[in-house]
Each structure stands twice: as structure tokens, then as C-alpha cells.
Length: 308
Image (cartoon, rainbow, N blue to C red; front, side, top):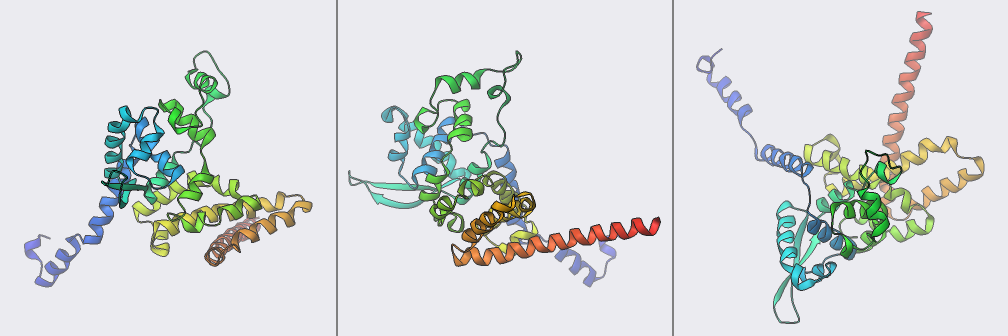
């Protein structure tokens, strides 16, 4: 049927359906933004800036440039890289202060998206050349590992350096201490987690949780409507993965260590009212999934028995 053959009411309804709302446009732009991020390849100077802000918290460009060996030569590079990262949305100006020379200076910080993108790039596996060295494999990484200290940001000169730093020297403790405001539910109790002995386990969930958070948030998946903010979404995914790991692995834990695992988990979720509330939500979600899994198994067993 042609549009001209429709009634006025039908035309009105069709026009309403064809209209793209402001919210639809926003989500479409966010999805496109995420897809561009996926293709993003940072230069080494940009990596240095992200890492400097992650480890030391908000700073001005002069302080950031100290992550370079020669400040006067590299300041222009810092300026260009900072502008690029700001345009991408991974860093932002959070304040303006007067410098010692009585000049206004901008204070930069990571954004939540910038820190999540950084977390998502933590290598999940070790490159083969660091484990074995077949004839047709590149030895560049192994040579770099043997010849250079990549633990310091100032020593990062190549993409190989950055990879080794993220793999071997990525300092989550510094990030938690200096970026608490970005993800307070995750970071504000980090010292407690270290004392309890679970910080490393929670940090191990960061790469997958960060990537999953960005995917969900920028593709408007259902959990976004429930949790609303990217901060809550990342916190939920971190602690959900942590609790799921301890839940599924509990049956394999030796009885002598079961109470220890329970005690550590209790200390995590009792460390703040927010975490206690989050535990109730996560535990309910896990229980619902287990109930559905058990229901599936029972139905399969019943069907097998019936067909016999």
C-alpha cells in the first residue's frame, strides 16, 4: 500500500514511527563512538599520558611531561597528545589553577571511559615469544624484556615497551589510590582488599569487566537501564565476576580452606553499605541463573526418562 492511500490516522502513526528521537540519536552516536574506539591505536606519547594520569591522578601538562626524559623537547608532543586524548574522550579538564608563574593552567584527569579503555587493554595472555622462541617467531619482545626496564613510564619508547609494561608492571594499587573518585565502589576499599588478600583477584577481573562494561553501555544493553551509570555498571561486573568465581570454585576448595574463602568474601561485601547492597543484587542474579540451570537439567532428565 502506498503512503498516499493511507488514512490520516495511519499517516500520523507512520510518521511518529519514522521519527528518530533525541534519545535514539544519542545512543546511535554512542555506538559509533565505541566502534571508533575499537579501531583506535594509540601512539606511545598517548600511552604515556594515560599511564601518567592513571598512576599519579589529575595533573597539568607540565607535570605530565615529567614522564618524559627531556621536558623541554617533549612538551610539544605532550601538548598534541593531550589534545588528541581529550578529543577522543579519555581525558578531560577538571579544574584550572594559577601556576607559580601566575598563569592559568589546566588540570587533566582520566575519564571513566578512558580508565575502562586502559583496563580493557591489559594483556590477557602472554605473547608466545616470551615463552618459547621458534625460528619463525619474532624475538623483539624477548630482547626488549632482557635489555630494558619497562616498569617506569619514562622508559616507554615503543609499542613493545608499552605491551610489556601492561603485562608485567601495570600498577593497579596506584590507580586505585589516585583515581578513587572515578569508581569509588571499586577503589575506596582497596587497602582493605589488599589486607584481606583479594585485591589481586578482583583486579584480575578488570580487563574483561571493563570491555564488557563499554560494550553494554554503548550498545544500550538491558543491564544499562537497571544500573543507569557506567560507574555502577563496571562495579557490578567486577564484583559479579569475583563472586561467581568464588561460588563456582567453592566445591573444589579443600574443607580446611572453605571457611577462609567464606570469610574473605564476607569481608569484601561488608566493607561498605554500597557493597552490601550490591551483594544482595548480585547474589540474587546468580541464584536466579542457578535456579534456571537446575530447572533445565531437571527437564532434560525427565525427558530422557520419558523417552526410555
